[in-house]
Length: 477
Image (tube, rainbow, N blue to C red):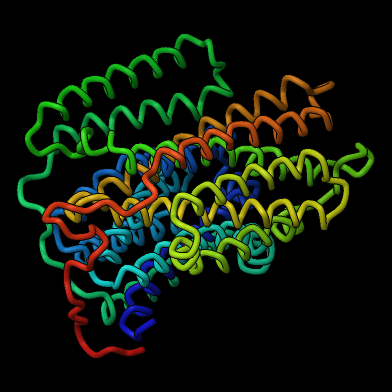
């Protein structure tokens, strides 16, 4: 990889890693936050709910903006907004200000689809594929690393330093990006569909709010049903308007194509499948040894047990491009989804010792990184340049929605089999098996995606680089 290519990839990857690590450190630090700010459990939940909703709203909008405007400027705008949110959260005198800060910080997820378009515009196809892989791999590694670092940092420095350190990482990434990330020309003409963005954002906010509150309010509670009904009406109206728009925020006809539809469906299913890991595994690891299935792990050891997932995902991500050339991209997509199913099923049948747990999560990390990276590479290759970032944004939102719904489903499965409020081993096994079964749907979605790269408008491969990097300043690496 060229020096300029490494620089273009490393700056957004560093930013993503810093913020993903911070978000994962907050969960173990909630007792400290609650005590310091005198917050109620319901208020604490909004730290994550606010960030989740803002990311769901901003990601597809940022994806479209990235298709239309200079991605360098947009990257700095997202870095500045997210950093402001982090600083506000770090200095928050009460829980309300902290929630507002985290809601502002949540727009950082828009960097994910932006990087897909940035790498496509400024890198050779092979380098862009490697960059997409590193984005997914580092995000996975940061998730596990956050669980490991949360305890020591909070104990030594206080929970506010979780924010300050993330802010420092974001500022370093922004400084690095100033020297190595080039400007990109405007790829798409037209205007931003703000009406479509408002409807899509509102519909997604209602949907995510319904999903995150259903466990406490109840799935049949009138308020929960009202949120889901309002979300359905809003998103339905949005779809009607988008189909009639000459310049829609999300081109639904394009999204119905085999590659975008297949990758989006994979994103939803991989999000669903992850609930076995996100919800059930930490609970099982933390359960007392006396239960017969728990390992009595604290937060630090839970992070250590899950760390192989991030390491495996990071190491395999740069290899997805060569694997696709060797095996064919459909084979790689199927392989990734199948490995996620296999790793989850392994946890169902073998979870009595640490090495079995670590082997299972490592296989899941391999599969998730391979599947999602190959999916993003397929979008970048098949979708016209002026829509690649926007479609990638839809994929990330789909995965987020699938993961949120899956987390609630996993909680229901565990609660259904609980005895005196304590989940049983059979409940965990059922959760893993259901997760693996849903993962088979991701395998099926992979078969929808064409084996060969389709040609973009103009008769040339869509993966061809559209601009030549013009690195501002000097090339440091």
